[in-house]
Image 1: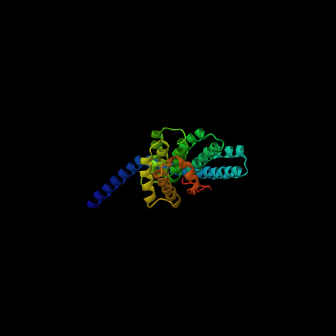
Image 2 (image 1 turned 90 degrees about the vertical axis):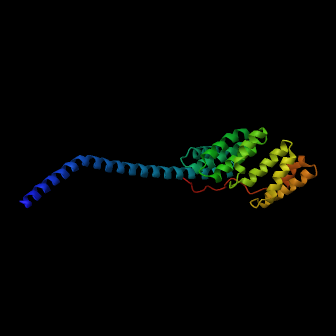
Image 3 (image 1 turned 90 degrees about the horizontal axis):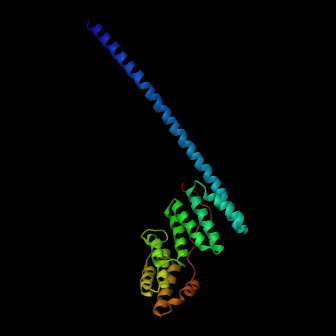
Length: 242
């Protein structure tokens, strides 16, 4: 008799499992289909980004070649194409190159929005701060001191890649605003900081001497006489960060 009860119980259990399986099967199939769709979408998106980065690389390199050949129209066209890319790195670099063309054409105010856009598009602080610092250099020629300070303050923070250059720019902005004492303090800190380049240290020392001698107004000539720091803008197209 016990065997009969066990057999009946086993049949009932099997029927319950079958019923549960029938209820869950559509959900399991749907989950599997959804996972497949997501996998294919991710794969397709990655392939799209790879192709976009490759095309941006081609456009950017062609733009550099056009600049070397003094073909400004072709350079602008190629950089504009790269600036529309999904690759953040090439987009940022292309926007900086377009800004550079505006500066060469003596249209620096038109270059500033392009540099601001390049900083926003950049995938990391190395490119973002380079673009932001270039924009700050340009606005120093016409913007009020508070606008220059707004742009330079974030770049002067500890750990930023162009901190030394940003601090030097801020000191020069204070010279231009007729604040030599404040500028001197900044130059002193700059000349003593461990992360200051040799070129920046030499310029800071020269400016301290100029301020102490009352010749701060000669700052532009002094800076031209001291070897400039290494250029901020990359000269070759990098591997896109994303």
